[in-house]
Amino acid sequence: MWASLVVDLLLGNFLGIILWSRARAACVWVSSFSENATNYLLRTGCVWLMGNPAGFKLNTELAGVLGTISLIAIQIWSTLWWLLGFFLIHLIKVVAVFGSLFGLTAAAALIIDTISLATTHVSALQWLLTLLYSWQIQAVDALWRLFRGRKWNPLRQRLDSYAYSVEQHVVGSLLFTPLLLLLPTTSLFYIFFTIMKTTISFVCIAIQFGISIIHATPYIKIFFWFMRRKRFPSGLWFEIVLCRRNATNSAEVKSADKTVSGSEDPRHCRSAVLVSFLHSNFLSLSKSLSITI
Image 1 (cartoon, rainbow, N blue to C red):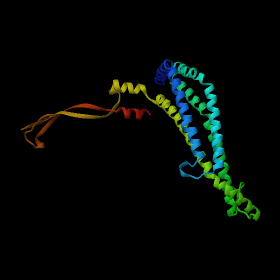
Image 2 (spheres, rainbow, N blue to C red):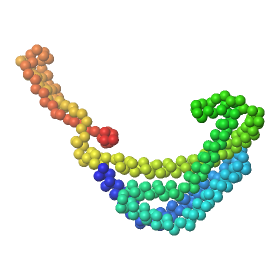
Image 3 (cartoon, helix red, strand yellow):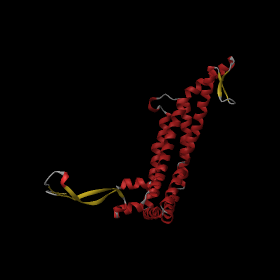
């Protein structure tokens, strides 16, 4: 535990020194990356979805409405971040100070929170499209049950038979057709923003995974494995150096490099002398870490 804290503080100081000394360069890189991501991913993706993406024939009106709303939200959020852009260099210095004082974990947590805050518009659009897509799927499912003459019973949690009237079938047909035809348009917008949200989540998870590896690594055991491998034995074995048998008429001497034999009759043996050395195998680094974990 203490070794992990020390390593965390050392890495935090290393990151803090780099960010503090190159705060302006980091600010320029972050601004350029966010601008490219906004222009070439979000805006271009929304415009692409408003046309005929991958050859799909979408509903032009609905795609235009969803794309326009998405572009407006992206533009508003980009304008807000542009107005607050002069705070970015101070934010980078705050991350550097947090890393120097509290370690790499605090700096990583602050970076994750900043990423989540900077991508709030993507999360909001993905949530709205998820809500719209869910309502549309539920409506299509309910209308499909109407055509089958089935009705959901919430008390028994099952589908029961039900006799719908002609008027209900007519209204259901009028609602089912446009909802079903508009479903591909909503689905593509939902898939696009879900991919964006998932990518952002993967970045945050990767940072958290790196911090977890830093905390879970047994640094003391690795240090002792490099310095004193004898502390990690893995089985014993004997190396026979000399084997001598005394007999009445003959003698046999066996060693590691030569063998001299006389009579082969074991009935004449009186005594035997065996000389061997005890050796020990050592665990590899991967096995040592697996035992620790």
